[in-house]
Amino acid sequence: MKNQLIIRPVITEKGDNLSSKSNKYSFVVQKDVNKIQIRKTVEATYNVNVLDVNTMIVPGKRKVRSTKAGILKGIKPGYKKAIVTLAPGDEITIFADDQK
Image 1: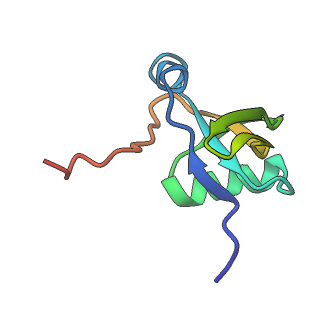
Image 2: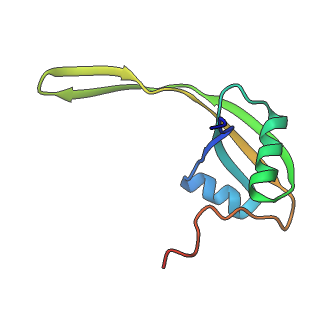
Image 3: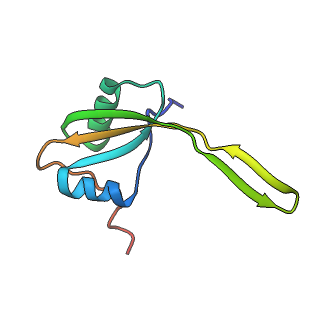
């Protein structure tokens, strides 16, 4: 199976506000992809016109957890996030309306 460039959409309150007000959508992507590949993949997958692509690498965070065996320390992995701006009139529906 071919590796997917877009791993999943980022579904947060801030991302929802961005999509409704300024027509921007956030995705977690593979770390080695560039903006041109992200643009082509989003246009082909969702059948929309992409105006702009911004990317950022979100660093991993330290996590500490207390258990019966003691304190466990670790690091959550970092990831690359892409914010895609769509043309006016285009929209991506992340949740399907068929789930009634």
